[in-house]
Length: 278
Image (cartoon, rainbow, N blue to C red; front, top):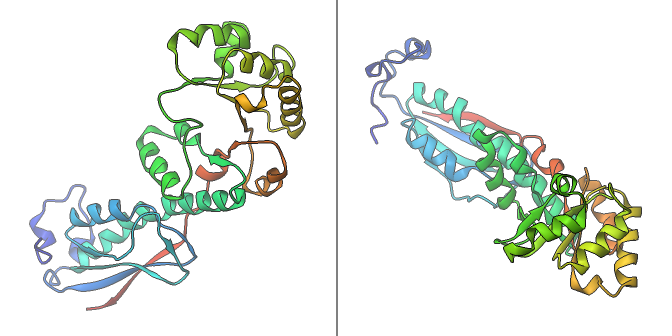
């Protein structure tokens, strides 16, 4: 890569005024650091390196996606001409800051569970298509699963239950597929404890209590145990839960928790971009 290739040799459109500002400095090399301003988990290192390569800037980092970084730690060192260095600042922080914030929040969720149950973040599916894959990667870099069960499985959500006329009819509809079933329970057409019993008797592998109400989780657990069905199913819990809710769930009968939006809505991990020397 020719770091000294003059920016004026490229016909930029729309015109970039920085070409004029740095006119005469086309072959002067400068270095810059990207520094984490808070401790967190990195996501986007590989992507940022690829963007830098396409921006005529060298990108040097000993860190990897999923690795923890301390406050004040240098994430990457960049070398390039002034024009391309200032362009890199616009591009590279955006590849790192937001996704690293999501990865950091995912790691905090994992730690909040403290091994008592699995934490899942399926809300990446509800993000804009253009950034969905980046968010999915960030969740994984933080250490969270994105699905309640390994593929292949069938996810029967609340709308399937509504359309098909109840849990029993929904379970009948998916039975010919011969795959493990994860079913979302909300207690809309019959008491949620009865929905759980029906789904378990009809072969569901995972029952997701999706109300966010601990009373519903306890009712389902009690009903399943009373019918001798609890050991045959996994019991999951969801419904606008936050990171702060996780430690308190450790004393409840639950195998998995979907944390959802609390992870994907994480704030950016603050980072700064500083030119350090010629």
